[in-house]
Image (cartoon, rainbow, N blue to C red; front, side, top):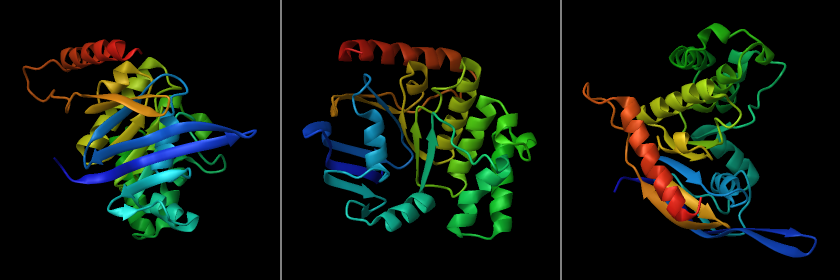
Length: 261
């Protein structure tokens, strides 16, 4: 077993609506190891996004603990959590939130400037390196309305990686994209994971989830099962990556059928 970088212990989240309790998360126990790529799946309303937001400290928990990089974040004040998220977490969402008044590269470097971990010159160099790696360096000075959805989502990924986060949280990162753009973003997530980023992702896409190491299945705020697929092995010259991914997708689909997907 590798080093655990993120752990939920008896995590609960309850909303009170008009005097009625809605238990969205029920005693979640989950460990994420360094370098893992984990997908969370489940039917609509199962609590997938709530789990992502609660375990990352973006939403408060009702009970339980979350240990992130050896620290118990359960009792942290909002100012501490905000700083922790800035320095050690990266986020990418289905809705591609960017500041409209800033061009693409200015959006990407902003968290780096705010973190003040290195000089602005180093942040700029890192941003340019990320944009080259993601194939969007030519969009640097463009407005966010002047690029495609796939380019904008890759820019969001660059922004999420600008401070070299311990964990990258992704909520339906390909949900608003067409199939081509979705594949491009998925490939970049795989590369980010190969480069050392730990990823916890919510997705409804079987194709996207099939590229992750492990899939957690959530129903009514409770973990009902998990499927371990391991790392994608497509490095051998004799291995057709499409065939490898198709096998993984078939295995996942069969398991999801058994889970009642």
